[in-house]
Image (cartoon, rainbow, N blue to C red; front, side, top):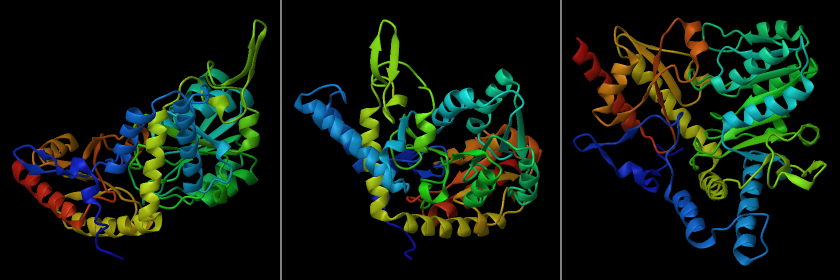
Amino acid sequence: MPNTLNVQGDFPILKRKIHNENKLVYLDSAATSQKPSSVIQAVDNYYSNTNANVHRGIHFLAEEATEKYENARKKIAKFVGVGDPNQIIFTRNTTESINLVARTWGSKFLNDDDVIISTEMEHHSNIVPWFSLVQEKNLSLKFVQITSEGKLDIDHFRALLKLNPKLVAFTHMSNVLGTINPVKEIIEMAHEAGAITVVDGAQSTPHFPVSIDELDADFYAFSAHKMCGPTGIGILFGKKALLENMPPFLGGGDMIKKVTFKGFSANSIPYKFEAGTPAIAQAIGFGAAVDYLSTIGMKNVCSYEKELTEYAMEILSGINGLHILGPSAVDRGGVISFTLDHIHPHDIAQILDQSGIAVRAGHHCAMPLHEKLGLPASTRASFYIYNTKNDIDDLKEGLFHVQKVFS
């Protein structure tokens, strides 16, 4: 395997200089990834040459825009191992995808005293929508505990399944701990207990091969902006039988089959859940991002990031007073959250920024997890295809500088 994927030149933003002509060391891809030129050009080309609404016009531009939009859906379906593109719904992001499930499937099929299971390592997007339902319907929300290593306690999950939950919602990969969960096993266990599964794939689909059909997930959500695509567009996968039995999420154009003064009938899937003018340019850009990642190969992406993560774990572990959260490199993706003795994460991030090093500081939209860990916040470095071992060396030297400032 190559020591680098040599893709840095594909990302225009990496040519920027930060604070006194420092090179940009971007280590915040878990928040959002940078965009290659091919994606930027695809979005620009749509606005420059094709701009028209989809599904509604019979003129040349409208038909061309519709074809590109629907081709993007097909590309994305193939990329994540979904045989039927009509099970791929365009949303704004992972958060909206999960809220869509809560507000449609959850509102219709969950009843008082039903049990929902989530986990202690979830992003707020996979907790808050369920709490909203709990408050409305008098449901019960239980959380699978994490072990001292930052993994899900499968024995505790097995015990919670005895409560006969209707829904199990969990992340494929933690955005804080980097933990990659045994998704297929969890889905099988949930199905055996009679539960529907909702998987947050925001941190998984950008970084390693995912086959949703093979996993047998009922719902699976992810976002373009974390995988080299534009902001403002995400995906909800849902099994056909589930989607067809769910009410529409929003009302308006494109989600209807017929409207009269007496009522309306909803469109077929996926359009039933895509009310109004969609994010056309973003969808086309998403298709270009999938093309870009497919050219590299997701197995190559995964193995390269694994090498980076192993190197970073080794390098950072040698810094006195630095404590890494979560499991070993074998069981994690390219995310490393840590604390540094006696120095607040916000101070760490601010000082690193002065050297052009971009990391994340805070609770990373996972306040319950930080409460569980007894921490107000942590610093997070996250890696992607355009990072190199030199970036990690720069992070190490930056952290030494942080310690020197506070010594």
